[in-house]
Amino acid sequence: MSKARVVADGPLGQTVLELFADRIEVLPWSVTSEGSSAPIDAVYTYGHPHLNGEMLDRLPGVKVISNYGVGVDHIDVGDAAERGIPVGNTPGILDGATADMGFTLLLAAARRLVEGDRYARSSEFTTYDPGYMLGREVHGATIGIVGMGRIGEQIAKRARGFDMRVLYHNRNRKEAAEASLAATYVSFDQLLRESDYVMLTVPLTNETRGMIGVEEFGRMKPTAILINIARGPVVDMDALTTTLQSRQIYGAGLDVTDPEPLPRDHPLLTLDNVTIAPHLGSATEQTRQKMAEISVENLFRGLRSEALLHQVEL
Ligand code: NAP
Image (cartoon, rainbow, N blue to C red):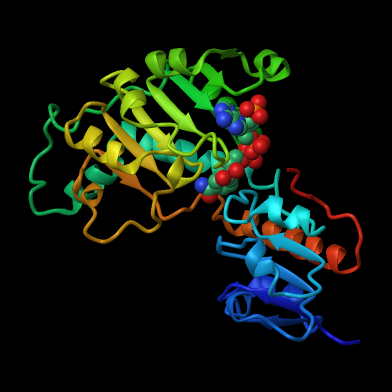
């Protein structure tokens, strides 16, 4: 059996390569700019490489684009649809892991864990002082979830365990989630004004790009903490930097930034009121295994022109 010719960004993880086995010939991502005279059967996106129609036009014969992950903001799904190419992703199986990371950041930012760890290791820590490093209470506080989707609902579930009041904002109300999670639908403005923790779990779209900027920070409580586990560009990074520098809000926890990674001399990296993870939302051994299996299954189904396990809708 001849191998399918698949363009992929790399280096690909070992699990993915094992699932490809001897059925896939991996071609380098440079083919998307250099073009190919021989047919290309599919595209596999692993680490969020940008992919648009112009690039697809250089790849004759592509039957499917399979993405390792749920967020597809790096792929122009409209361009793919115009060319009749389905785009597969991996929703559902990473909600728990990503919500766990959202809560990890929330707790770490509220209780100054990373700052405390640095202090506990330093030579400056010579004696316990009940007055140092006071953080913010988590239990009983109000959390505002912007984007009560699959991941947002998992955040709400965890927040209930901490006896938090749960507010959320979507474009559409979700009455079932309101009933099962005791969550209250509010306007974006009310969410910003009343939340102690603003948790971002929206996809990156034209509507959500920069949805937290100078004006929104101005509406947040001075004690509020912003957590971004969505995508970096949902937050205006310049506005975030000046807001944290002037301590206009209490702090932030970021799994994602814009750009990613931040330049090594970015002023955010010098601040003690921000906790940053290098995009670890779904990074557990178990979840990454499932992401590999589903994305590779989507790839094989697309190559056979079958319906994908999960196809992104426009
Ligand atoms: P989802 O189930 O589609 O949920 C997204 C939610 O956002 C929906 O409830 C949607 O509701 C809401 N939304 C969309 N546009 C909005 C807008 N303009 N204003 C307010 N709410 C809006 O998606 P998911 O699976 O939870 O994933 C969400 C995103 O998380 C992904 O797209 C990805 O970028 C990110 N993610 C990050 C990591 C990480 O490693 N940090 C891991 C996985 C996913 P309405 O349609 O009613 O507005």
